Length: 302
Ligand SMILES: NC(=O)c1ccc[n+]([C@@H]2O[C@H](COP(=O)([O-])OP(=O)(O)OC[C@H]3O[C@@H](n4cnc5c(N)ncnc54)[C@H](OP(=O)(O)O)[C@@H]3O)[C@@H](O)[C@H]2O)c1
Image 1 (cartoon, rainbow, N blue to C red):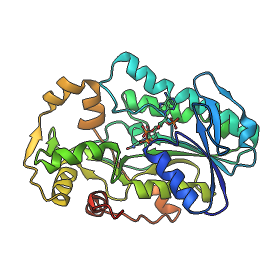
Image 2: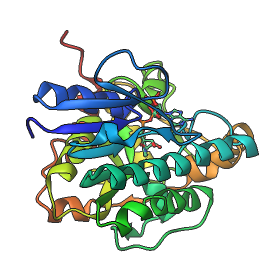
Image 3: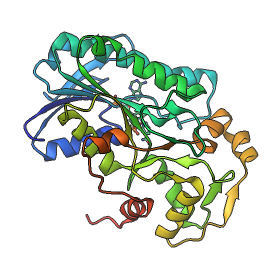
Image 4: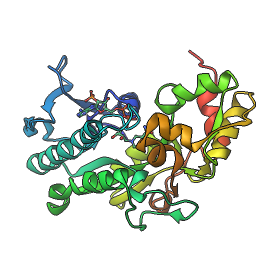
């Protein structure tokens, strides 16, 4: 994609910043929606909490990509923190959904997550699977439903149900790599829960692909083609770092430290497959967890 104009909310985050760089490197214009005073002509102020946003700034844009939200694994889940997870996603998505309609933007790629499916154990789920149970599943449903104004107005809305994004720097692997490098890498609980991963590079390519491909609409799993169990994930990261991973962290210890986040975020999982992306002809750069781990652990070249 070249010479497109893409507005991004959450552009300072792990995915948003990589997407911004990739789009700019390919000669596209990125409008960053910022929650502070703008510091350049490519920045547009918005206040997702109050809804203050001059939607006319989006006129002429080819797509809006929404990647905002307080980090789900940022803290132990108190009632107040869970509310902030909802408030930083649902209201802002409603604001963007109205704005794309008002300004005539034809495409909205809205972040969601595989948490939509709840804990699927070893059942394979594609985009046709129903929503699951639990806080994250409810959050993802409400987050996706917050696009309804845009959907009703005929905007092409892609609900990108992203899995665990594997990045060479940042995200969950930035926390795991030092532990694994010290030989402290461990399975979580019984290790049988699925981890639907995607490399950051493929996540960014999938967003761009979704913007460009008119046949992609509605839910789209942003996950790699081969989800693995936590035990397989742990072994793969250990192999990539050349460290043994014989240990496991018992479920009760994770629950004691992390509370509800342990069950929903670490001890449960989704065996999600990217059926919609593959049907539309998307080709992954990282197909297997081994390829993804080689990508995230490769020494920096610059
Ligand atoms: N990374 C993953 O593994 C993963 C997996 C599944 C789903 N997702 C979802 O994908 C989206 C992007 O993920 P990410 O890893 O790039 O997240 P991230 O690094 O935590 O960045 C999220 C961005 O959201 C914005 N933000 C933070 N607090 C906010 C608030 N209170 N109200 C509105 N915006 C706020 C910030 O951008 P600005 O300061 O620029 O506004 C922040 O940089 C998130 O919605 C996340 O839940 C991510």
